[in-house]
Length: 369
Image 1 (cartoon, rainbow, N blue to C red):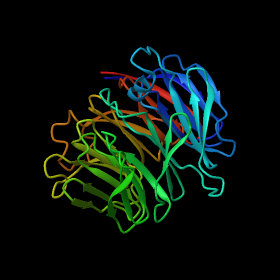
Image 2: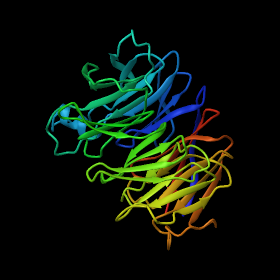
Image 3: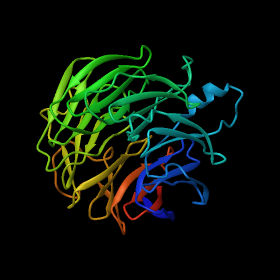
Image 4: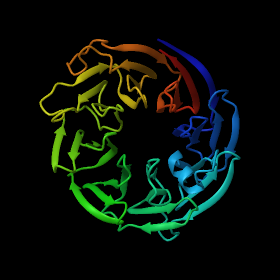
């Protein structure tokens, strides 16, 4: 395999969020200071610099392609890519990324004074004709559902404590919101609370398996907790060195990669799940801080650690990935960055790996099998 530098750029502060457009044509990178840069994916040319949020940007999220095609009709050949941004103010801004223009602002309520910490667009399938796309925005204890024109569709009942993570189910029918004390599952059609999943502790990360079977939290205590909401099943995986802030599933929903130590711990979630199984322990030598599986094949896992290293592991191709081992194992490449990675993101076609860092440098690496 080959992994080479494709292009690099520099932001004015550390890279707080990073996301490829659904068609892979653009890469959006948010600076913690506020500006959001839009780059051409192939050339690295800066296309637009969005003012975003003066006091600082916290999160960015692209509207899914299927949703945009649905809203603009089957005749639309090139719908304008919409990017949502949230920051240190009680509002979400929506941008036409094709021309770099602000198109709408969703006001979440000045009285709250809460920042927007999390954004997540509802996944939509090509066959879904039930309505327009919805963006979930978390601000303090409040969860807002926004339309693509910036209007507020619904404000859900406040969570018991501040919302710490959001995750839509892959089919878009349920929205999971985490807080200190548990997870709330919301029915996206009825706009009602479907289920409470108690957890006695703080939750930092939340993710669904791509098949919608598992809902997983990375916790402060430190541990990983797994739910099967449909079967009312819970599993707890403990023994981590530090809180678990990074989680990643392969597209086949079998392998769950977790941070929380100097080893990348990979659990086999097939069949009855990881309980009673020994995980793969992929040695980094420094605490893990970022994880990302490829989107299609899922054969490669990118993992960043506090020493500035980004390693590529061939999970799908490993002869026995579920066997515990502290050897180099299925290591395919190591890249030493000049600063610690804050975000990792594969392009939709898995040909490019974007790496955002603490010193504001943005790298894209080209991968060839």
